[in-house]
Image 1 (cartoon, helix red, strand yellow):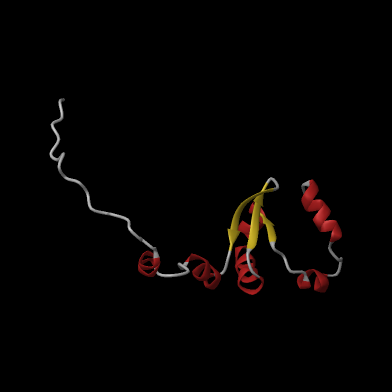
Image 2: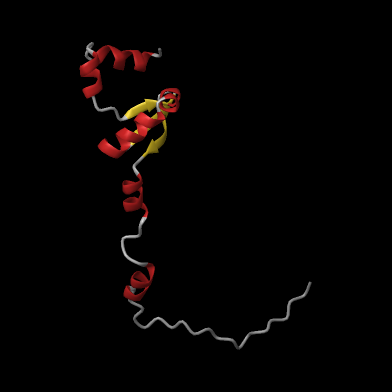
Length: 104
């Protein structure tokens, strides 16, 4: 067991009942792989679950409900574009120089 994992393990209560009551939110890759169902259950109940490799954050597991909330646009694109003030912006192009003569 690595230093950080050993330090975390030593800070946990010793009884099995107390261990089950602790809400986890950080998992090492090998532990998350072995206990994927538990990681998913924790994400559904308690929010995002961080997965680390050698102490570095490499992934986050979130519930499908939270993913849907995070990935939907705040306002529809059409509404956003309609709200952009164009003012006196001229979007017409001057086509006097088209077609161009290009030497290859």
